[in-house]
Every structure is written in structure tokens, then in C-alpha cells.
Length: 459
Image 1: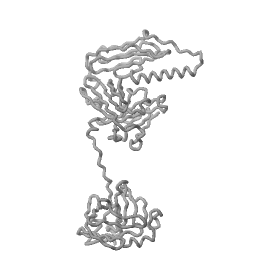
Image 2: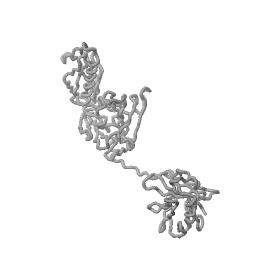
Image 3: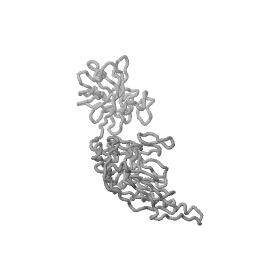
Image 4: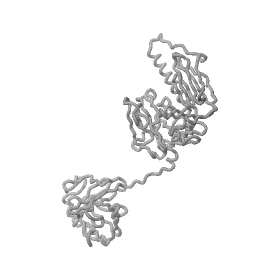
């Protein structure tokens, strides 16, 4: 019965070969039960014909049922079919001599019982009775995960619904971000997975990355928080495709209107790794279609401006002059505004920074004079002055220059200048008696999330 049965039979054959190779030569397999000796019953419950009762009557043998709602190895089991239709069942057993399977049994159900699908989880999965809902793996061809950190997480075998532990034996989780762990799987178009409750519980899965297009059935056990799929496998990657015995045997880790996490058990024999849950992360089609990248700007940097505003700080009266500090003229700051090196004296600067006592005279003339009327005068290293204008964005502490660009050479290679938009941002201040005495103007790095900062002192 497709890949899942083939994998299970392969494991059984491997186990038989292993036992044969490791036991004395006189060992013989037991007798193989005849197909005609298979004894079982598949009947409808007399009080509820939508409940199908399965009973294996081959004593001492392990049954394997294939039902419209998944597979079972129980001697007595039941299957709840909400909708009328023609359903197929297969019974088989594992005997000492090997696996034997009966012919397909067909059963006609003519009644409806919607109480089987009235749990809110069915609505979240499918959109409700008479509807269908499409889900995507949360990874696209542009290597973007729209909701989760990545398309695949890992967890211990005791990890369960709501990210809770079913027991403490093997309960852990690892949620790698895809950007830093692209080895998880290849970015690409993983197609779609649609769960329908329009007439029957059917699942349609199209996975271009595996080259598969499947239609099958499914059953959601809202109490056990499991999902069984038959003849269709959930969206997954090729890297793990051969590591799971039964892709249709799934734990539900979480399920909301927009997101779903389904976990398949990684088999140690198939994977060569320990048993673990492969937790696949999905998003609904509606969520994916309405999603747009967040426009994330730089974080707000709060600076102490004494009793005034930025405008007050840089040009309190008619004019205020700021001279480039000769003891600590430059440094770097994080995107949050933290000064990274903390250089306070000339002796603090390492050799690679290229600033020594010999460079002090070269910046002694460098200064900026702000006037309250919006004009600014920049005096360069040579003492030449240029006048322009400036504006202040009080909400972001950004100063924009026009008709003049501050530019001061510091030591062997540093140049204290503005951004491509001719802007500086106030990153840090020192305040004495409510008066701003020092300002670190920041030049935003266009590629890296940081600032180069230039230290000016009020004259």
C-alpha cells in the first residue's frame, strides 16, 4: 500500500534476514499461514452504522489493518466514518513464516454522523464541514519562512501537543532558524496540502520537490491529538523522505487558524540516527497570501538631552560650537546605541585605529557651529569654514545637512563625515547640570547594523 507499507515490509524482511544470519544453521522459520486461514470480521456497529468494528480472529498473530482512516495493529479496533461512501479495508497478519494479507474488503456506508467532526480542531484543519483548507510548508523558493523560524524543528519522542511533555523520558525540542541552518532542507516550491470535509475526509498533497501528487484520506483524533493519513503523505523534504516508516502516522504539536505543526517519527533503523520527532511547520494559504515582510527599522535610541530638545542641545542660544574631541574623537556603536570599544583616552586606541598624540594637532581646528536660526558652519582640519543649513527630526534625533557636508580627517585613515543622505544621528550624550556637554554623532553603516560615532565637545 504505497510507500508506507513497502517500508514496513522492508523492515520486516531486514529483521528476518538479520535473524537468519545471526542464528545457528539449523534454525528454520516457522510455517507461513495460508491466506485462506485468515480470520477476521469488519462490521458496522448496530447502534451507529458509521462506526466500523474491526476484529482479528487469528489468535497469537499480530494483525495489520489498513483502513480509510489509517493503519492499526490492534486485535480489536474501531473506525469512525462521518460521511457516506464506499470504503476499502485490508487485513493482514505477521506470522512466524512471514506477512500474509487478505483481499481488499469493500464496505458501503450510507449514513452520516457529523458528531465525529464537530471538534473545533476539525474546523481549524479544514475550515469546517463542507469546506476545505490548503496548507503550505513554511519555506518558499526564496528561502523565506513567513511565520516560524524555519520549516523543520526536532523534538524528543515524548514531546506533544501544545509543546508539552507527555512524560519526562525523552522530552526536548530544538527550533533552528532556517537562515542559519540552510542544511535543514533545500529551499524551493514544496507545493500544497489540502484537507477537505466536503463529502468525505480527503487529503490532496502535491509536492513538486518529491515529484508526487497524491489523493488519500485522513482522520483527526481530537482527543489523542493525532492525524492519520492514508495514500497521501504530508509535505516534507527529500532529505528525510526515507527516514520515516509511516508518514501517515502523525502527532499534532500545534494547530491554529493560520499555523500547524505535524510530527513524524524518525526511525533509527532507516535513518542511522536516534529516534526523534521531525516537526514540520505549516502555514495556511490565507496566511501566506496575505503575508508581507515586516518593514523593520533601526531600534529607537534614547539619549539624555537635559531639559531640552535636540535643537536646544546643539544650538541653545544664537550659536553653539562643538569641537571634535582630541582625546577620544571616534569609536563604533551597536545598532542599539551601545559604544563598542569605550575608548576614552588617546592611549586607549590600538595601533590599527591609526590615532596617536601626533594626530591631535591635525584635528584641533575641526568644529561645527550650529545656530538657532537653522544655519550651520563647518570648520575643517585646515581652518577653512563653509556655511549651510540643517534640520532636526526630534523623533529620531537625526540631523540632516544641506549645502554643507561635515568632513574631518582623523589620524591615518578615519574620516568623520555623514551618510550618503548627509545625515548624522545623535547616539550618546553627556549631560552636566541639565546641559549637554558632549555628543557622539553617528554615521549609519550602509551594510552592517552599526554606527561609526564621532565625539564632539561643547566649546
